[in-house]
Image (cartoon, rainbow, N blue to C red):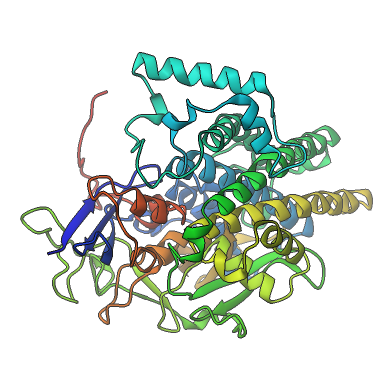
Length: 550
């Protein structure tokens, strides 16, 4: 007889995520329920506020995706008032966004997901000389690849283990049969885990140069940006370029080679389709490259039918709450079962604070995988060569990207070609300045703007599609709504039982040890969940919910 396994919370993500899977006698997942465990209340905070403050407040939806939500809110207001921002402002916003893509993807792989593949204890058995040779299998110029470096890393890890203090590596399922890399491969990837900590520090500077600071930028305003002094300062532009060049070196010599290593080492998993969802992909596209091309193409794919790409139509987006803890869009929490598990016996049982967005009635996957597939299939010249080179080097096919490991490969491919594009973006800004186009903010009189209006914004952000919707009455926010990437991917079922991407990707996954469900973590982490974007908590009456003393 099968059983239910509860993982609460899923760690190494942003926010509170609970997963319950039902497995058969052989440990194969037959059903899955993914639950966001905190209520989103940011939209409530925004009600009755000045629309020009929307960005400052919406940016607090998440401590990771601050730039994305800030921009989404500002552009929703600009849409409502038909404000067209200057070209310089658009470029600066894109420079912030592109740097955020680079930061987010690298941090996700190394610090939120890598330990699902890398056995820290196994790395202690690695031979430094063999590790340097292993690195050369995936790159002509491996990043910081020397015997001395690996010897020092082994010494550091050995001290951690002997002292019984593994720090960030505590409580791992070390020794699990699902870890299949060699000791040298483990050490190589672990080396880049530590290097990525430094990467995370300096790439944040690139975001802050034009954002004022990070997280929670200060330079975005309705109408444009305020960082005109940074735009005109040659030193600041050079600092940005230098930081991106430094980041590109790590991506080209560590991140992309590491992903090739992983794809080759886990080829059997990829070919078995482990982590594959239902094949419905959605992208809204964005970020102008030139007059004819965008960095990401928009489009829709159904059921992995790569020969037919449908055009995106925003009118086909709906959001359901039948199985989320809402009633007529108001919070409506229903208790858990006595044993603490989710109530899921009936198709009408509610089990998550995450709402259920649908496109044309379908659950969809958004994010790097969706963008790469749609852009590639629409012959996007910016990305096609990057995809072809990666697939050729790893002897994979396009369908192989629609897996747990492939989802990560898509993220790395995307990072590589963003690094190429970003320098052209800086050049375009410099050209504008050269010919005395110095505008960074549109001029408007707020009192003369419409008293009642509505707007929306659609953005591709690191984890997928982000959309903000605003309804304004008497120049105040009447209603506000956000559909974040994780809302799409972590959606609960609907009354028909249709699973979202997270849940669908878990079906058929085999657990070797139900007490150590590493296989489940690996699939979920591949989506880069951010529950802080999908759910938040606030008491609408302003009461204290809990107090903690640290």
